Length: 286
Ligand code: G4P
Image (cartoon, rainbow, N blue to C red; front, side):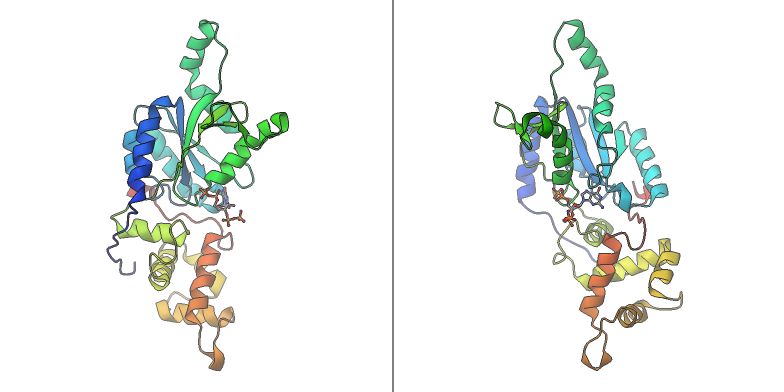
């Protein structure tokens, strides 16, 4: 692996978000934490694990379409062993989003039975959707609110109590900024967040991020790397950049390689589907 630098980064307003979540958690029937399937550990905030420990939690592994299925299955199992309910979803296409409803019912079945035995009508489950920036919260909320949109004509339908947003017939979501900034002291976590675009490119130098990314691909996904860019095992970092620059025509005047463009090419490929499913966090790191 390439050199990893110590990173100090944790925005101050994270403390405000955490305080708000801590205050509102009591109102929840169930909490949904959205994780990035490619980085199920880096996208989990340990503080949130603590705050939510007495509530039923569903971990939604979003962007399943971008992850390495085998590694994702192992990570999911690890979280299940820790007592979490889990579901893999693709909020963009809507895959498995319809299963969230049934899973929540299963998780809350005792509570539902109790209320039904008292003759009470089942009200929508109160929930909070938490996740780091860019993990897909808005996309998921749009998907979940679709079913109510057809009935009420609202997207999403706003209930009378201002703060609660109706998501379909099943959930009422508290309208708080459920944004969690990732906290990391392990530089690897920072690189994984940067590679997938969860933290802005300017927080870590692109050159470092690409260096880490190419080393990572060489270690875990060598075939994909070699095939995509016609790279050979013997090439070092700079030779790989030069090769990618030449192959993709990222050149300055005089045929010099335009490294800034090469960094963008690599990151765009990794963040899209061009290299197939990739997982950066490995289960052994949990
Ligand atoms: P946020 O509210 O948590 O910040 O995230 P948001 O929903 O804005 O999603 C961030 C990006 O991730 C969006 O892409 C969105 O389309 C994409 N996304 C969300 N869920 C999935 C998923 O399951 N699979 C894939 N492949 N992508 C997903 P964008 O490039 O910012 O916008 P656009 O592509 O929608 O134009």
